[in-house]
Length: 401
Image 1: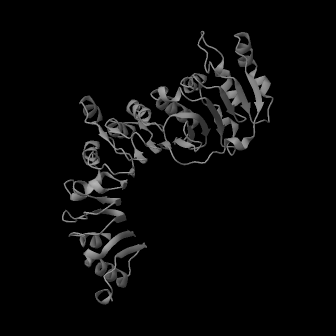
Image 2: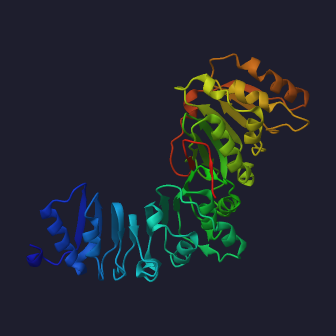
Image 3: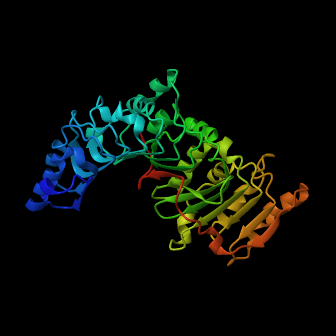
């Protein structure tokens, strides 16, 4: 049929767990018409290799390619697509000298490297070299399937990095270790980035000074409000930028609350310059969990968690956390937390005034009175998209060795 059809552009689309013999022959036939293929979308659990092998020549009008495989596949070195604009690969590797990441890179608008595992691993320096060619790039995703320790980041960061500016980048999604992320953002400038999702495996260290500088260099990623929600396996942080009412999101996935707080304290410690601009902070928790679950955190950890929020004027929280957090707010050796707070909101259900008494009295005596307000629980339900930072683990943080 293809031999007798008008020479119109072809879209090759197949998604399924098992490829039937007839479908296989049809896909291979369509791939043989390289000069007509405009869009390739292949997602399958098996037999991907034979289709990828068939892409061993130039596809002159190909603009979009999505390869989603459950097993590792390698794109042929001879595969070329000079007009490619969107490249999305899951468990697929590209030869490091392939034109896809050299000459073709200049035209890429979106690049997604997904489900990266050890067999298709590449160090930050290699992707940075390719990113330096992608002046048109608007969307970038680098997603690891599981944590792969990157031990050379300190050596890379000791060297004077060549900065790569991505002037059109609007969205950056990352999942991996904090050290790998540091190796990337230390050498990237994205001044107009507006959507950032960072999911970090809970592997020490979690200090991110270069991420802090990266956020500060992006004019759309300064924040005015944050909501912190503790659950059984994750702590979520929803952040609202100054220049938008659309919330961003940060999550830390750990199994127990004390691990969540400890990981967040370490992460927040290097983000202090960013968090110090925030004017509103809210604390909540998943109501499906027993209150005893909240009893394992030392008050000193709560203090360290709150310490970066030096500009906060409003703090809100749900029941259960009030008695856990507010005792830590009492001044300690003349070191008051939240020095600029003006309002405390709570969601009702307990005698909040008793829990707040010490804190309120101290602020009254110091000449900085604080008002108490009952707030609607629905105010804590913030949409969970745009910017996120997630620590992925159900165990205590691991240490890279």
